[in-house]
Image: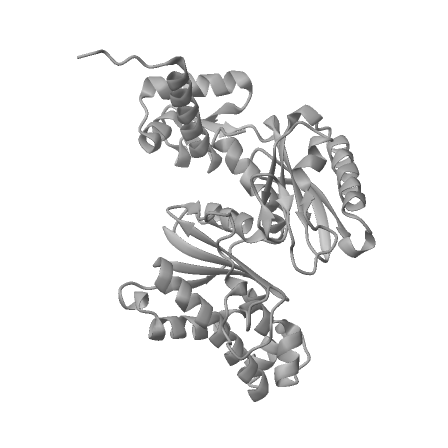
Length: 389
């Protein structure tokens, strides 16, 4: 039998994958070498070699952990990431506000600045302002530009993810067929990742939960918009054109109003504050509506029932289609969420075929205000830990 010879590139790929495994273990917190051996399945020798390389590079450090409770014994040696080894920038482009942030290797927020998008007449003028603010943040925090590993950009869909082009997002005239990667190429040679807000928030929430769910739907609900991301086997499901998870543009009311996307009765259209006011003659914020519901206001309760029914309609379809074990909701609907979530959970349990096989949890997101700001860097940081930069 002819002997199989591994090429140099094969060895390089194996080494890169092994480094990725070690970094992924450390991205969740301190670990001992023996912990990494158990989690990764790599040999002690391989772990020792890789961790020593990372220590020499300055990426990780050794930390002595003393026995707890006054017990006598040798201190254990654990490894942890060096926070200021490298940094990542995150750009958020929204219709109301746009922002720039910087986080360190441990995903800790260093600083951020935001602006009202409407104050800018062109995309270039807004991006120029954000770039200037990025340089100020780096200078203020004594961060050399060469330590910036990449830039994550979040923008409304649709867009061409591979080429970094924001295509034709509704109600966002500032960015139409705009190549965001080309703009940043003029500024830096660092990689640029373009992604949807719901996807980045889903990655952030999954990390905070330590990947508790195998298949879940993450819903981001703002005051007048709904986006979603599907997590399967701890990975975001992107779809062929990178546009999966458009839950807000699924029809839940066939006789409803026409959406800007061209569809009829879209979820985010019928749950918009404008439509709810027209339908129920009820003018107040969602938080005020919920407060009235807890006070027993019958009209407010009828509006909340409507919101729950339409959200349930979309969620049940998603649960039946993908076999989800959890639905995680972030944003507007997290305010005093017990009443709304119990209504949705009851509807899902009653009408979803899947819920007869296993429970489907309806849960609030774990994302804090700081996590939300820094979530724009989630994809670029994931690529870094996956050794893809």
